[in-house]
Image 1 (cartoon, rainbow, N blue to C red):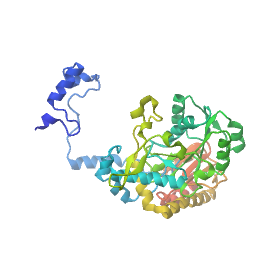
Image 2: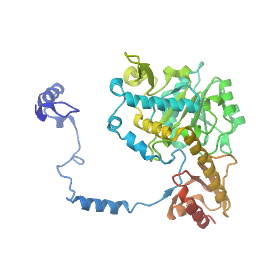
Image 3: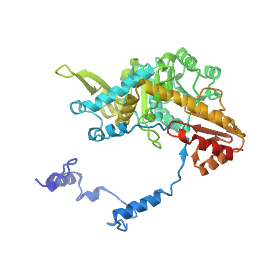
Length: 444
């Protein structure tokens, strides 16, 4: 049988099948199915000069050499940790790379077990009963938590309370979710970058569906009032949603112990590192809400021979099956990134993960002390313990300081007129001396 008879291995449409389909929709050829303006239509040539492989590689090197070579001390939700090469070697195996959602357990036991281990790690880190695998990113996870709150809360409520320092990108996604669920997103004040508990107490009421807080916060501070936030939410029958990440969770108090009902965040800080926008949303919640969890769940069962087996479970929650009755519109997941997170976490082990988390505190503390010794710089601005990152005050205009630091080869965030935010991990720690020297030059 020729290729013309069978089409491709992935779309086996031969000539007869193609003609039958075209006849069914009433067109003569496939091109009639598309309306492509002449201005963008392919004219048959790319108008690209033919080059040898060597010439192409040389041109690419020259092009890439013009890219600014900056050492990034950037954070605010995207964090770069060293990813061991073994993560790539295992995750790049063809059975993982070519796998979509693991609907057929008989051929996907390895992948399903890895995802089950990922879920188990998050359950252990949070103290909550159920983790999925997974949702798109931290912002999506927050939006899903808000809609979950409307489904599981005992009484009606339409208000979602978030800190006034919430990143605009997260707020935008949450607003999109809220608009479709008849929710109202409102902010409550923070004091010195942490929750202003008296102000929150005045804001939360019986119409509050969910209260959201973060630890570490967007400014790197470790939130000290989580227990109080949990109590306020519980007093008004609102869900308490906590934003964090797997590295921080290895060191900080367990969310379940401070009354959190849902934990969201970006799990890709393990296994992926900084990916310039790409992430993976973690979502962990109480077992009471099992049937309301968005995204995929991997469960453990037994096969006919009594051996442990893994399978996707409770899929009737999902939009691709229940459509308008679904609890979530997430119809795919970040399984391959979750796999990478699981491999990275397993390589570190409990002790290694804790060591990494402790370094995130000590490195930030050490760099802040060094910057604070520089005339014209005060670090950290906020009087709290910090995780990975901190805010420094500068006498000079912060945008100008950030620009001068970029000219010297270092990227930092300018978050307002006189504040710089700096993030340090093991991947940029070797450049700290240079950053401090550059600060001394530009901040005076």
